[in-house]
Length: 159
Ligand SMILES: [Zn+2]
Ligand SMILES: [Zn+2]
Image (cartoon, rainbow, N blue to C red; front, side):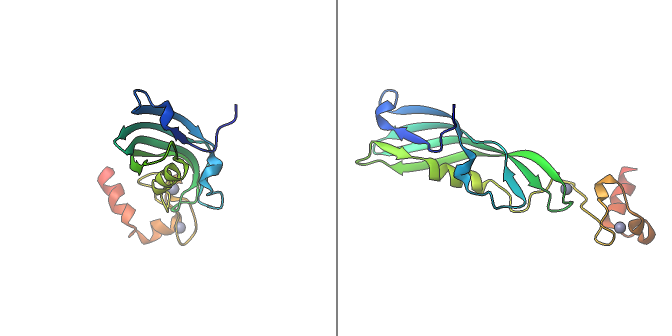
């Protein structure tokens, strides 16, 4: 079965005329972020949302998730991770409407949760600006020679 590319709420389908639990995935093509070099979606946009009709307004709350391949902006390594928006919450004015297209809103919701400068791990040491070595793999010779890298002090504490 193909992953749909739109997320539509149909008021005629709401339980008790009020509630709906939306759970599923939207095709990643809706994200339109294929041109980002440092971040590439690898999975579909996964949503788990609760809709509630309050008078003429539809309240939609829940979580959005997206698996990505990222390029670490410190060390340049590719890594895989999942980004999420756990507190998506929007209200929509529904006066005179029978359906609502949530696609654009959830697209914006997950895009806001994506970092501009992804980092493979909190304490990624990056690469040496002098010799280009990945410092996560170990110190390079230029750091040893000078002995004044900020990481030397850290190494001292951990030893
Ligand atoms: Zn890194
Ligand atoms: Zn170096």
